[in-house]
Structures are given as C-alpha cells and as structure tokens.
Length: 67
Image 1 (cartoon, rainbow, N blue to C red):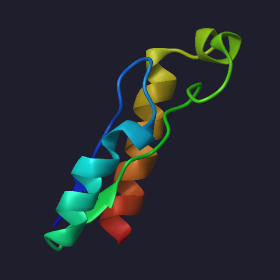
Image 2: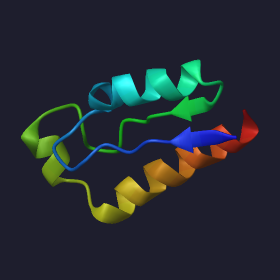
Image 3: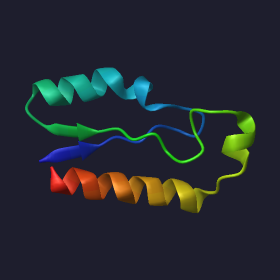
Image 4: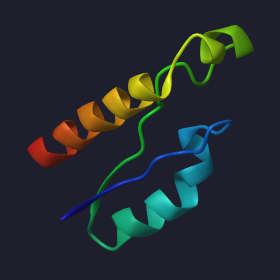
C-alpha cells in the first residue's frame, strides 16, 4: 500500500516531509511529487493550468503503482 501526497497551490513537497517520513517509517511507500509549474518563478506557475497539475499527479500515481 502506498500514499500519494500532494502539496497545495503555493506549496512544495518539502512541506509534506514529516507526514511522508512517518508513513514511510510505518512501512508505506510514499510519493510526494512537485506539481507542474511549482518550485520556480511566479511566471512559471502562472503559465500552468490545473490540467497540468492533474497530469503531474496522475504520473506520480502511476509511478507509485509501479513501486
């Protein structure tokens, strides 16, 4: 069993670190991807849409399923 953790609009995966570490210590596989457009400039974020974020989450979910 695994968990896919998604950060918020202005967030980054590092904010989920403690939750992810706790789940991992409990024996779970955890993925916390950086969603498209995040982690860079405001312009970079402004040029992405919710569909890009969903695509990022779907790709991460597929990687989680493979693990």
